[in-house]
Length: 411
Image 1 (cartoon, rainbow, N blue to C red):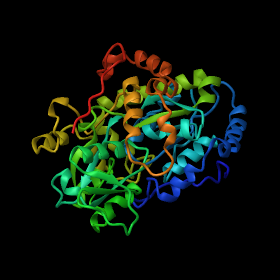
Image 2: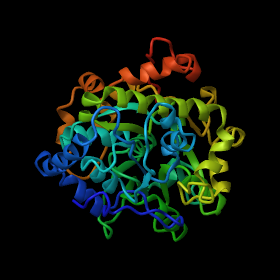
Image 3: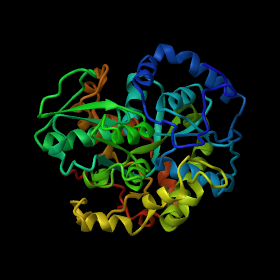
């Protein structure tokens, strides 16, 4: 593993940067077993042991998608500093493989990660880390070629997902099965039956060009790639992820267990800053694009303000309701929303749904997981509860006072 200075980090200058999971990335991460991770763990411990207490700087790792909004808003608005923390410049990574490797090595200590991928990291690779908060709700969509008008039209075609262990893969497969289609993973030259949909993993930035050249019929991924496809007239949104699983998490905040145990005050301060960022974002949605855009002060992402404006618009979602792209209009959602509490019911449902989701690689570890156990073991909600109460309580985020809810999935 390279040192922090030499780690394979790429600061994007254009939307050509990929931030998904290629087959090569998947193989790299699949090899990250507990034994293989040991040198990284030791390297991370050595780094952390030089920085006791709350003196450890916040070293953010993120991908250039709107899921990272709270981490980046907290940095831009200096919420970490308000909590007595020091920060390094957030580090943008090209793939989930890179961000996980850097996290395991201790090069970054606060990351956002696909919620299903946290199961894989903790229980398959056996790296000790926990979810301390959600980053956002919803924020993804199924974008298809202009001639696709229904999920059933995807039969016999290929659709891209950003990673096997993603909410995108789970929700896409639910839509396919509910419409009488069978998700498969065929080799490139393999025939696809009319009732099958071939799934491939592809970096988000490659999805738009793949859709344009018709090598795929659609993709499901985080914004702003769906918005970019629409603006560039390459594709159209067929469904939003939050219209299939109501107010679901996509990416969550992931922190190493050693930091949680050895630096509880630091972990609390980090979580406080992220919850402040979400509360601020709820009331300032139209200011977020200028913070994240490629021409912003910090150039956090390669995306233009015009594309990001579409994602964070408070009016745009209403148009999809009028055009019946949104089926569950009574859910009263936005394209992306913010709420930090990691509901146990969601984690349990995540485990249950992932078990029946087609993925490549060895997923035997999933069958051994008890959903109720995972909800308590994977998630540490002490810090986020404190942080939510500090900004005014659950009512600020329109969530139940008892921090409980029921999961709602629909076709």
